[in-house]
Image (cartoon, rainbow, N blue to C red; front, side):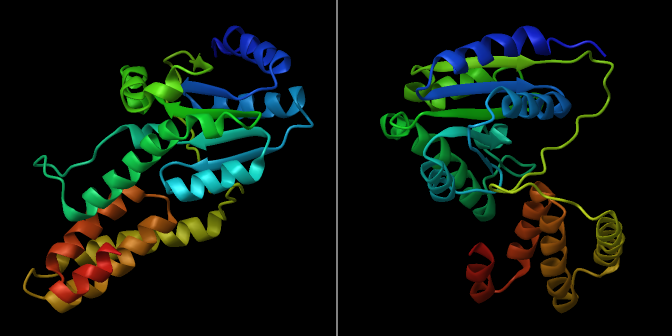
Length: 253
């Protein structure tokens, strides 16, 4: 398997060794194995540096900033950063109430980081955002538009690529600070339960509102536990449309 890993990361390591100040580093990758390799090499190259991580797909700006400021110095990874560079709508191009809330969360992260550039820069931290190839070729343009101040200040770009014959990209299954360990048995049980709920939902008549309303909460929670957040939002939106006005407020919360 051929890749450009060495030529891309060596200048970064040199930069971080010679510069103990704040750095904004953008890492674009088409295979998560290269990200794992980068993390391990950073641990070996800088064993005294503390490391923290958050998942942009699951976090708020408040959670992200708290983890960053608590770190004080070291290396700070933001996983799945491509998620906050987009705006989500339904298949008709409509921003539903549920999507509106999540899009606002996304904007709060990019805007919040950009506005706090000077505050972030007071800490000797390498802020590394990880962007999957799913973001598309225009990811840099999105960052420049959404975060112009941070982009223009001590930024560095790394593009990690492997040969296109690699067929699958491992996922970045991280929660804030602590890595997730998936129990294969529990995962299998959850997948079986997911198939059961989806089958049950497909077989229920639309007029059987009560039964549908009992399935959607289970389905959304199960998808969340499996890390299928986009699918969870889709079913959350369906649940919202079916629910009473009183329950809709709770669903949005």
